[in-house]
Image (cartoon, rainbow, N blue to C red):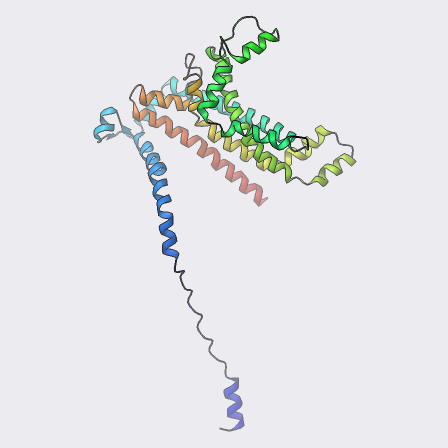
Length: 316
C-alpha cells in the first residue's frame, strides 16, 4: 500500500457505532403493581360511585330499581322535572348564598389571622396550633359545639348578650330563618378560616420586604401598603383559597344537617340536603341524582374558568 492510499484510508469517515438501546428498569413492572391497590381503591370508592350517580340522573330509578336493577332510560326527563320545581331552585339559591357567605367570612378571617401571625409576639406558635384545631376538629364535634352555643334556652351566646345588656329574653338563633342561615355560615367559616390562614401566611411570606420599605420611604400609610402591595401580591393565592373553600362549602352536608336539618321551614335546605331528602325520605333516587350532578357541574365550571384565567395571566 502506497503512502497516498494509506492517508486516504485514515481520512475515510468512520460509521458511528449505534447508540445503545435504553434498558427498561428491572423494577418498572413491580412499581406498577405497587400502584395497583391505590388505583383500585380510587376506582371503587370514587370513580364508580360518581359514574353510577350521573347515570341515575338519566334513568327512572326508584327503590325497586335500586334493589332489582333494570332502570329505564328517560334521558333529560329528570332534569326537566327538577328544573320545573321551585323547591330545586330555592335549594340551589340557598346553596349559593351559603357558599358565598362562607367563602367571604373564611377568607376575611383567614387573612386577618395571617396578618396577625406574620408578626412576632410571645406565644405565636402556640396560638396558631390552637387555631388549627378548628380545622382538624371532627365536623360532628364542631357542629354540636356551635349548636350548643347558639341554643336559645341555655346557649353561651345568649348568656353573653344578656350579661352585656344587649338582649332581655331568649333568642332562638337556629329557630329563625334569617339567623339560622347566618349561623350555619358562621359555623362553616369558623372551620375553614384556619385553612385559609395557612395558605395566606405562605403567600404573605413570599412578598418581598423591600416593597414595604420603599412604600414607607415614600410615606405610604399602612392601609395604602395593604391595598397596593399586599392584596395585589396575594391575588393568585387568594383566588386559589376562595376556589377551594367554594368547592368544599358547596357540597357541605354534615354541618347544616347536624345544626338545623334544613330548617326552620327549609331556610337552610341547601342542595346537598335537598338531594338527601329526595333520596332517603321520598325514595326518588333519580331526581336526587340530578341534584348531585348539579353539585358536580357548578364547581367544575368554576374551576375551568379559574384555570383559563390563570393561563391567560401566565401568558401575559
